[in-house]
Image (cartoon, rainbow, N blue to C red):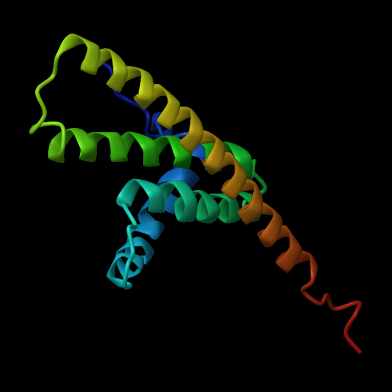
Length: 143
């Protein structure tokens, strides 16, 4: 009989944790943006932009790589948006072989673009966090 040690708890890598935190934190903001007039905010887009930004901020504050967290948040956003598209619009379409091939190709491009947006917004979030933290007064600067 073997016992599992409590030290062997498997956790997500830091970049994935920060991406999930950013994704979850972006959902209320995306919902508020959707209520604005003429808004076309989507869950995937909100995670890709706002979630990646938040993930970059959290990663920078935890001394981790903000671009890695943003990359993963962009990937999560594109994956969720593709599943939403398949569940809503994809069920109404007639899927011939050329249409399936086209959809797979375009899905790959969407994932690549979303990952790049995620890296960009993750870097911006990390830069903003580092800028704000570096401007905080220290005890040596206070008079």
